[in-house]
Length: 105
Length: 409
Image 1 (cartoon, rainbow over the protein chains, first blue to last red):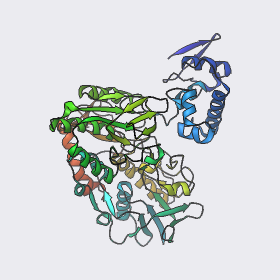
Image 2: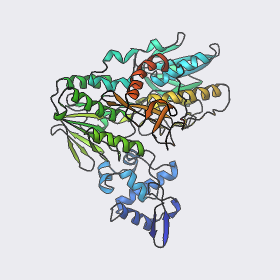
Image 3: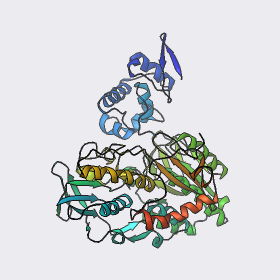
Image 4: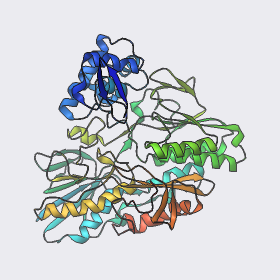
């Protein structure tokens, strides 16, 4: 099991190295998780996506796919890839403290 | 008299029609099936058409050949389903009411979802092989092609038959070797996945096959658009892959009537209970095959395994009992690997493809995750089984839920 030291808290991870316990997440943890994905700064646009993902997860029990993100969050696919290079849905879910979306098989 | 309505007469719908027809009391249940096409396509055969292995006639038969007499079959497009009113509206203005609805309208390609895909190079230098038209157009192109950059690209997941793109490049390697121009053809497999396949163990083994066959692999590539003039595909994060011929697996979606009915997710697939195969929202609607949003492969073998579970669950529903049988996500895929050989994989929701023997432990005759001639014969034989057993709803000698027997963990 991978763990990460975060302000003297050891945060448990799942097999995809996403947070195991949703309740471990807060804004500072998000900043640290973003650094692991080589995102040095979380801008307002990042937060818009992160908050949208958390809201969707709470309502639907699964993090949204890129397609759903684009359609519902108001952030275009192109920008999503700028904000979260390579895999927006996968990376944003991780930073939001959620498990990897089921759609990302 | 109660009414059972089946939407879609493809692999899954036809199988279920035959199973239910044989089981139901004709004085109690009236069965109607609706489809927009007269022709039944053996879709696994499309893969072989570009390489001249099968022709059009090998993969088509009239749908009516598989409908039992006495079934009300309607050839028409579906306008929409009104689940609250228990009825379906057709484009020919017919209105069909139902007591029990089974949806099996499948999945289709939507090249128009990607900018520049269905443009001036469509079916000239850009081809799909998930339609009979695309497969035949590609066959004609390959016949006279003298070589260059052959790029296979998967747009996004999920897609129907997730092994077909791999089979395509394996067969291309074999085909161009046979034509004596393999050294003039660069084969490049470009996928949005982190590896050659969706499941980690099989992905590593299949990735090795790509390597061995001198097929280039690019992963984590999410196509944003096609540049028709420069002949290249461009990802959302600005990676570029040039092509002389692009074989694309476009976005897969459920039929548009599902959107009009407000019953689907963002790709028009219907939220379905992954064990009972009942609609998550409507008690008297069941869903089978590619139309579901299940996290299982969209493939004929999966529809077949689902059909046995669903059959029991629909009978339970008709008798007023709770549907209790549980589908486990079982998939079984013969992967053509070229040069008269094949690879076989067998897996479900929980267990990824593992090596071993199938279906008889230690004996086979088929070998899991290995390349053998026998696996190829399995695939060849399957077309005959499909027309003569599978779509007729007859039993095949394979369990519907996956077995661990014969597998090496």
